[in-house]
Length: 103
Image (cartoon, rainbow, N blue to C red):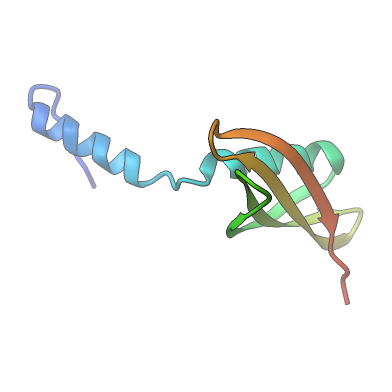
């Protein structure tokens, strides 16, 4: 447990460092992947989430890939979400959703 003392600036700095460490670099893209999936699959529940990594795309683009597991109307299935990102501006270029085959 971390206690915060408002009178001790060193403690505030330590708390800031902890909060910075707890948020991974892909968190922003993960939120977008979940939002886009929720829009495309209205009524589905996202029950699991996996970050697959950042991959080199065309020219200055990179892809952030996520695997989301959804539950809808009594069935469970996976959706791979690929976000194409301009690395220079860190802006979203495209979103691709692909439902995975279940066995």
